[in-house]
Image 1 (cartoon, rainbow, N blue to C red):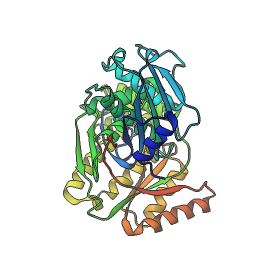
Image 2 (image 1 turned 60 degrees about the vertical axis):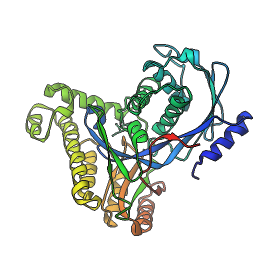
Image 3 (image 1 turned 45 degrees about the vertical axis):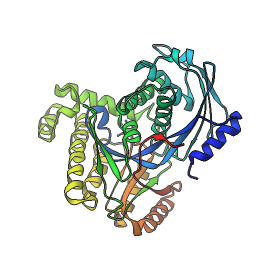
Image 4 (image 1 turned 135 degrees about the vertical axis):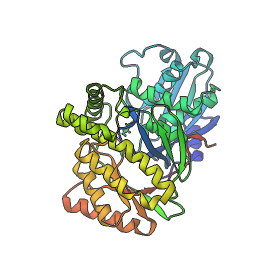
Length: 391
Ligand code: GAF
């Protein structure tokens, strides 16, 4: 069910017995192309989607922050005094509330004076599926970040809000992620992608033209769980850092395809393949943006497909379910398809002509049933506006 600002405000009133000061929303994101390039100082090209997290906020006259949600039974409570610290004590934050409370702590790190603000009650509702690779975490953090930026009149610009979200995720949640997801959620625009240079943090919104060309983005959520605070994501990041160190560069952004011959000579096979993914993926992002501008979205399919192969074979972050979703969509005539997000589960996307979406989704469902996999969840998303006030 879609989350509406009005129903979030109504839920706030039901929980707290008064009306909220306002409702803000933060969208999830799909990454069109540019995977694991963000923490390598590279290029990404995601877009915000028309599924979001809404947060209704009402101020209190003490130092307590209390949050209720549609998705967790218990309310989460913290005192602003516990967040007004240089380093968070172990165990101060845990579970879903580490994301929004982490944002408050990170705002302090970026100069917000938490002594000057009062506590608040909040109610959170979301239609971004958790664990689907659509960054429900960025949706939540960005909704809270824009809400508090307004409510507390902090004056942070959008780029700083993205950095606040990333810091919260890195230090309060403990996931060593890059800055892509928050940037997509904050800078998105309807039918546009966010082309971001993760080194300079310069961003440009670029028209995707999906509406004009009658294209839909089909999300195929494999429902295979993934988590970025543990396991493979951090390992890949460490491999990239090792590759950069051994190649004598600050980050893999400093290599291009001409350096791959030397990389092959100097690196062990696994590190070489990790490096090759990042180097070629950066190039694919640049090529996608150029192709969109010159030929339109129907011409970017080969780049999306090549990105998936690189993640499957070189970066090794795909799983059999993601491969099956991608291959089935391609066989149904999708313009292009690839897994999206951090990998090891989550979702794949296919760029599909509007009138072929139903058929493609049915084929993916059938292929999963034939393979004996858990039924996936297939739905379309549309590039939409970034986080902001909704009511
Ligand atoms: C996750 C992370 F949060 C992003 O920063 C990015 O690294 C992505 O995986 C992979 O491209 O979504």
